[in-house]
Length: 129
Image (cartoon, rainbow, N blue to C red):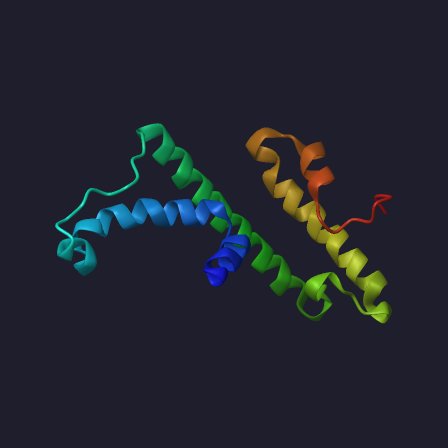
């Protein structure tokens, strides 16, 4: 159970909600469910809820892919666990600032809310430098 909680923290709620939806598709074919007389699936979702769950899961995966792309792009400069070597600090700051502008620029077509994305960028100093 502890591993599930840890994975939920890492993977996020959106993906686990998606797993619950996917489980419904194979519920009746599970041997333990058949052995118990095929009880009904314990969760029900409206069409609107399914749309939200699917959209959230797709966005979560997209976000993970974007972070992996950034990590690959930065290579050895990636601040593993938020820690940057002192001798790499200035290089990392420059690389992250450049990545920030590219990333935020790719999102402008969505809703144009650039200021919100800039404020949420996780790698800036508190003073914005």
